[in-house]
Image (cartoon, rainbow, N blue to C red):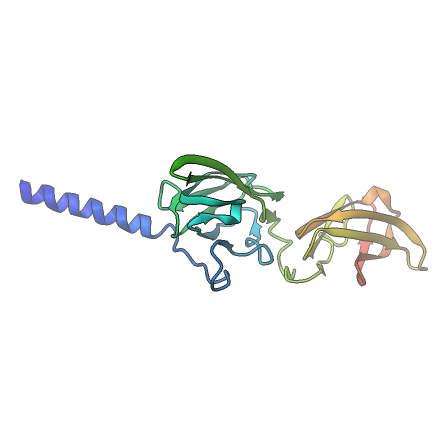
Length: 252
């Protein structure tokens, strides 16, 4: 009986270790050598773009400093940093930490895994809430911290194909032709102003609008009742780059 209990306990321990090990493995390769603190991926790379109703997985790694210089408290000694919440993830996504309590000791590397199946199109800034547990001249002091360098971006299943997220890129409106509604997906490398125009076949502008694009995937929504049935050329301009496509509006 004792042997069976020991075997069962060993098996349970190994299962727990295995499941813990599968959560994520810290990878701080994006942080420059000698830099005391950082998060990977960096803000320029951002998180992977998700697709509605498709499984998603993204690891985020943290290099924890030994003092509070990077947080504006150079005299503080970092005991640990505790991630207390990740707000504004797309519906269907959650996070898990390694270690499981989401507390990373000073001078260590940790990570958390964002995973799940997103259920809707989404584009919002993520707020990672944390508490830096510190001591200042031997006195324990907790310092709340936030990180807002990432966005949770999810696009429709038809919008991701051929859209290059590393540059300004515009996808063909879908559906095309359309008789009710259509969407144009485009990517932007920064938060910036974008100009959208629609021309008829003699070159006259029939629609024009300017709006603020967000870094990552963006959507322009079209209503067929805004146009007469026919063939049009549309352009999306960001900075000095303009991309044009052809669209067809049909009557119901």
